[in-house]
Image 1 (cartoon, rainbow, N blue to C red):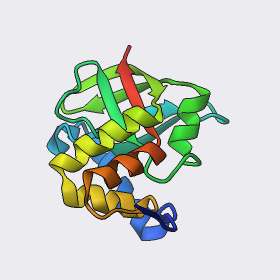
Image 2: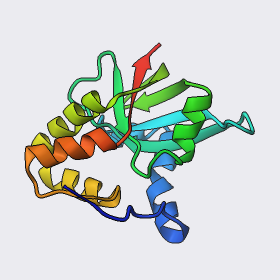
Image 3: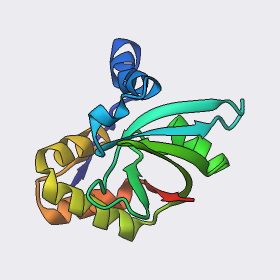
Image 4: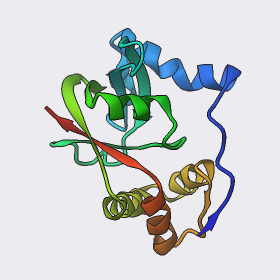
Length: 158
C-alpha cells in the first residue's frame, strides 16, 4: 500500500449531489436506498443544532447491534467531530429509525472491517481507499493496512 494525497471534501455541485439522498430520507423515502446506506442525525458541536449526513454502511450484512461506517474524508470531517463531542445520535436505515451511541474503533477492528468490505466490494473498496489517500494493489494485506489507517465508527443501538 502506498500513501497518496487524499481527495479534498466535496464542494459546489459535487457536494450537492452527494447530499441529495438526505432529501429522500426527509421525505420518508430512504428505504429506496436499502440498508447499504444510513441517514445519521447528530448534534453540531458548536451550534447544538441537528445536522444530517448520509453514509455508506461498511457492515450492511449484519446490523443487529449497530452500524459501522468509515470516516471517508478523515478526522476533520464535521460529522465525525460532532460525534466526538456528543456521541448520541439517530440513525435511519431501511425502514427503521433508532437511537445510537457512537463508538470509535481501533486499528485492528478497522483492518477487519476494511478486509471484509473489500472481500464483498473489491472495486468500490479500492476507489474508497483512493479517495482517502491510499493506493492499494487489491491484495487483502493492502486493504487491511488501509483499514488500520482509516477511522471507523460503530453506531451502536442505544
